[in-house]
Structure formats: C-alpha cells, structure tokens
Length: 194
Image 1 (tube, rainbow, N blue to C red):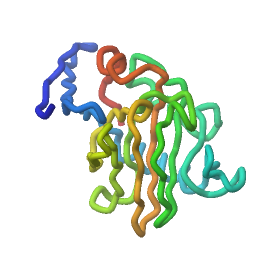
Image 2: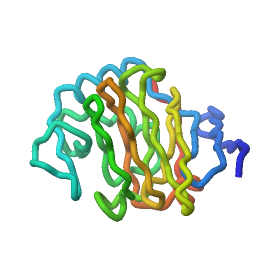
Image 3: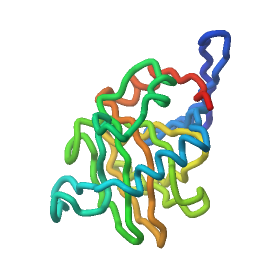
Image 4: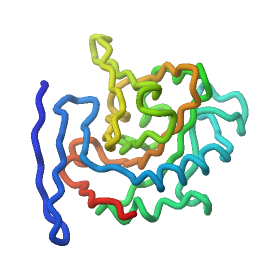
C-alpha cells in the first residue's frame, strides 16, 4: 500500500499538484497555510475555550481537546475557504494541554458527523508536534508525523489517538461529512495568498 501518486488540476492558470501518500489512514496534500495565517489562528486558539466531547467529557468548558465551529465570529477561516472548492461542514481549532491524551476513537461514531478532515498544525514546532496514531483492523499502529503541508485524515473510518508530550498542541481542521475517497476525488485547493 505504499507509494505516492501525483494528481494535477488547473485553477486560474496555476498548476497545483496534490501528492497523495497511498494508505487508508491519511493522504498528504501540497497545500500550506501562510506563516501570518498560522500565527493569527494560533493567537485565536490560545485565547479560546474548549469543550471535550463524548464519553470523556468532564465539564462543558474544560480547556482541552475540541472545539470551535466556523460560526464563531473570531474564527476567521475565510482566507482558507477561498482556497478550497468544497466547503466543510465545520471547522475546528483543536487543543491538547501538555500530556493530555486523546483516547482511541472514531470521529463519526463518537464525536461529530466528521468522516474525514483536512488538518494543519499550528503549534508547537513540527519537531515537537505530537503525531497521530491510527490502528488497523489487526490493531497495528500506523503513525503520522505532521509536516508543513496539509493532510487529509481518515478519522471517520479508522480508530486513532494522540499521546501528547510536554507541549500545548494546537491544530486547525476542516471537517467533512464525505468519506475520504470522495474527498480525494473532489476536493481541490488553490494556493493561499499572503
């Protein structure tokens, strides 16, 4: 199941290549957010109040893993939405405090209607950003280490978890109800403008 396959599409005279890591858990795409946008989203993420979803909820405003929807006025994802041809059903800023684990789960079943998500790391640096672990049907672990570019995660089909380290972990996700195969076939990105 290894290997990569390039996809090409044209958008206003710009050729954008999407490189896909061929496995059932994630697909890397050649789309990055600008440093200015990353800093802006991180500032919002650090000031936000988070809600823990599902069976692990302790109280409504616990500062932990999930949540801000795109209808929150100060979550300005318009620059990002201008880069994509199909709007997500929601957008999230995610936070893990130091050493806060995200237990094994499948998103569509336990938390949201999210079947797949496009994710960008915000903080800490990539060297210190905790990876996500996926588990196949035989309980084998497959670990994804985030990169500068976006990744499409198959969080609605496969069990996954995060074991956070000593850093606050922040990320930005566009959540889609559509399955990963549909997202791979239909979602197109254009470069983000400064």
